[in-house]
Length: 73
Image (tube, rainbow, N blue to C red; front, side, top):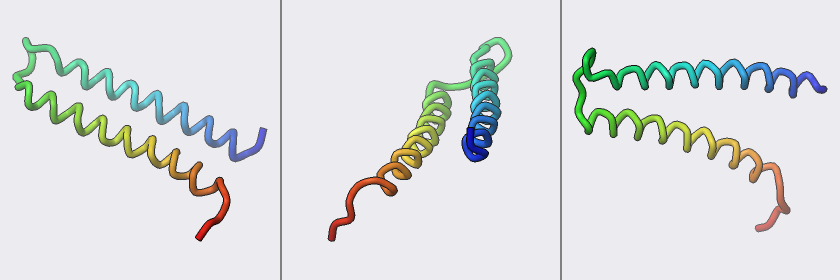
């Protein structure tokens, strides 16, 4: 396996696992006995998370589209 591939796998696993853990911690905030929050608070949290996910996904799509295909004017 190439060095670039190995580095990608290593970093992707670390970063995704860290992100998954952080998302679980956000879920812990749902305990109404410990925290006070509104539906609007929840909407803002998940809107921000979804926006970042969409942007990250688009960066992968843009990278594929930018490197592929024929050049046209």
